[in-house]
Image (cartoon, rainbow, N blue to C red):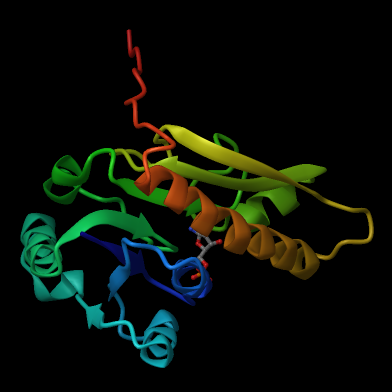
Length: 199
Ligand code: GRF
């Protein structure tokens, strides 16, 4: 039983989770990193941390289904039971989502449902909110729309620049994400799909 982390970019959350899992001697280890881009900064972090890293580009597959089937094969090889998204810039399709429903989590740098999608910190900054934050949630088929597990507020101080706010948000992420992942894996948080009434 192990955890796979998916990333597309810098990988600071990936590193924070791996470090914490080692410090806390998790019995469910992070067994691999999957990235969808060759230039993801997370790759160097994986090398440094000694975590196997796979670059699987959707461009190498004719369809999203085929791409996700290849990911499933890889995850099977590593006995992966949990998927942790950490800056993975794709909507997960049903091929991957259905077998991992309730076992896939994501972190988002805003207080959802405000500012979903890309550039959430910039969106919040541009709106002029005085409080923003971090959300950890289960993944569903939508954009940052799955059931919320935990949220932490971060105040925007009058002297803050967007860079300072970004640093504060990342610092909170690096603390809250590893702790929350462990609670989910150890059954202290139970998954319930959120019912959405559409008519
Ligand atoms: C984080 O802000 C996370 O909330 C969002 O993407 C960013 C990834 O940062 N989903 P990093 O690659 O972990 O440094």
